[in-house]
Image 1 (cartoon, rainbow, N blue to C red):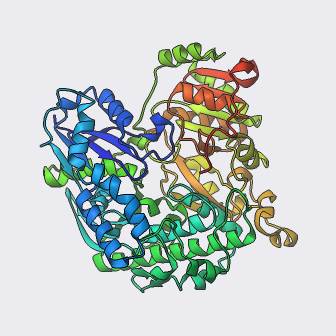
Image 2: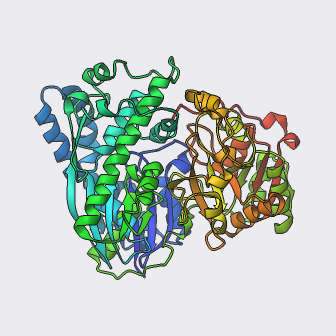
Length: 611
């Protein structure tokens, strides 16, 4: 048996994973253990978890692989500073001490950190380094259900590459084309995330969620920033940006072009201007991704597409690529960002360096992305008793019946079951659930439970067999990475007066039979649920359907704004007691808020920083 430990760290979303003979055994992000969102530090807790879950000591692991090459990254930083000198001196002087102390000599740094796990770990000869974009491409291709695929990776920046095209066949994977820094679709999108007052590397999905409230009136102005070729390749005009040399994303020229300074989220509210900006950058991003997809389909004549990198989390753009029918099939890595790099680096080492063949699974090899921590019923009860929680235990069928009744009655429920999800989405094991038929559910969950902006959309989890009855899509979407429109038979037509509403006023218009998950443009970010991947969640939705005729429930991640998704029963209880959640269903236990000790209540509305 060959065990490989994959690690990603030091930028954002540090993570670790373990492969045994090429099979994915466990994977988790460090943030879930430290409770620091997007934690970039060495993933000590995640490494401990994957080792423990795999029943391995570090000294028993055969190979350890890091997701990128620090020397290449350092070369890019130095060349960038030289090219833009003297403009970049401030950011250069801030970056260098950390590089010289830790990042440049990462092999030695990693070796010392790894020794802390196991004093018998004696050699750094088994530490390897992958390339950032190869790690992303491998994370998408190797677990995919395709023997052959073209792989499109787009993110901020790795070592030099920001966008790559790779071709995978069998166990082979090769990068064919690259676009290099400072020309980056991820950094372009992040510049607008910054400009609209959201946090870079965290708030990009807010920008995407805000876009349907606006009109793309700034599309032509954005095209002054970026030269887009017919094949989707692009170049950014650096006079409008500051990320290559400065400490902000945009320059004064950028602010002059759009006639406003970046929004200060502490002082300024979101206006129609910000909604229109969001709509405009979203439209340009979709145009680039569609052009890239069309050109690589034509060039390589391969019918399957895999996507990875942070831009692959833009599920609206993914949905547009799907609806254009450019490829026969699309598969997207659920941990598409840097966390997934840990997995991709390990898979690349196993298949490319160690020349091991692949086993292709007709669904995929991600096990539903349920690759994290899990707790037995005994462990859950012990932890809840220790905290002082008041709970009742139910048999399986009774638990499902009671929970579906609570959902039907409009209650907001924390749902904690099985193994924690790997990647940024809660997929029915660390989720907050609600009734999608409720007109107030979206607003209430946002404002009373998540403590975040009311415009933020929620995802529907739907039984796979009912998908095409409710949505204009009929492909698997197990990882909530595709957006599609509500089926016309489920839509409610808007009056002329409603159509004339602007911005957030659109939010309160009931658009369909499931208003809590219907976005203002009649779209939804869909998660399909099957018995094979998550039986308990599937059975709960089936029970809800049996009682209501609706095979859909609201699914959002079990956390508040700025907090990582809950990991342990204690995390779940704290979030439950710090929000206006009505019930917590954890293992076979049900906790009712009114039955808890009021002294255990927490104030979560101010607990975490804005994301």
